[in-house]
Image (tube, rainbow, N blue to C red; front, side, top):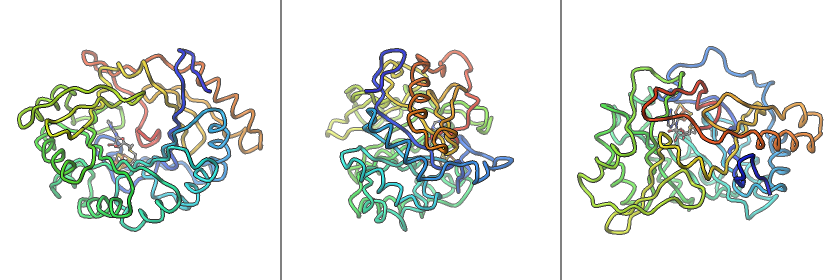
Amino acid sequence: MLIDGHNRVVNYLRVSVTERCNFRCQYCMPDKPFSWVPKENLLSLDELFLFIKAAMDEGITKVRITGGEPLLREGLDRFISMIYNHNPEVDLALTTNGYLLKQTAEKLKNAGLKRLNISLDSLRPEVAQKIAQKDVLKDVLAGIEEALRVGLKVKVNMVPLKGINDDEIVDILDFCKDRGIEVRFIEYMENSVANTTIKGLLGKEILEKIKEKYMIRKVGREGSSPSFSYLLEDGYKFGLIDPHKHDFCETCNRIRLTAEGYLIPCLYFDEAMSIKEAVQAGDIPKAVEVLKTVLRDKPKENRWRVEGNETSSRAFYETGG
Ligand code: SAM
Ligand code: SF4
């Protein structure tokens, strides 16, 4: 079992397989970075797997593949099948913008993927285009339908932004409700890479919009999930991720690995340690030692407070959000 310096059990590894992306979301990667990390600096998927396998043997039971846009990384289905074959019980999930899902969902499912989170910020083509800075909606919707068709368990993520898509919170909720998909509203997390003109809605503002149409009932957090669940009267469940409250830090169970081999203990902070040298030297026990050091020093909580103007200096596309 992996336990951090604040006595929290860590069983969830989020792996960013690429920082590259085919969208330019205003809250994440509004401009193409000055340069991408050169391909030769990345760990290969086989190297990433060696570490993931060891981490699973140490107590990781849940692996989420993310990015950047993970579907841009070649060989992803083989990577998923390696993780699945090491332990078919692993809770194996992926977060994607959905753009390439129509072509890939079936392969991913056959490789052993169980769950998908798909980002959907608008149902209006022009608003989706404004946020992603590309005409994306048709393909994302086709991707969602295909994922459902092949039997993947789907959740939708929406980041409500003031004056941009905050009038669509209920529409997205209804879209998901009609398809039996859980939606999670995520508070915009301020970071220095994002477009400086955008403003997010706080959790309570998101709930106010939903209450204009529905009666809602608080349920609570499921386990260590950062998402707080609510129920509508008809039993439909949706989630809210509100890091500005940071009360979910108390039960944080996660650690992040980047495509370059950095282990990141908390999204908010700059701290990170590399496992790259150890993995590339074939010294997996050394990489596990690095993991344990990072866990020992994992911060107690993030700093996205409501009153302060706290801003993380880390780009979400590097860490996988
Ligand atoms: N490209 C994939 C996608 O968009 O789903 C995976 C990576 S993305 C960084 C993972 C999640 O982080 C997405 O749901 C996205 O909406 C969310 N995200 C990115 N930047 C964010 C920010 N500044 N605040 C809140 N959520 C953010
Ligand atoms: Fe790309 Fe996802 Fe970031 Fe949007 S949120 S720019 S899709 S990594």
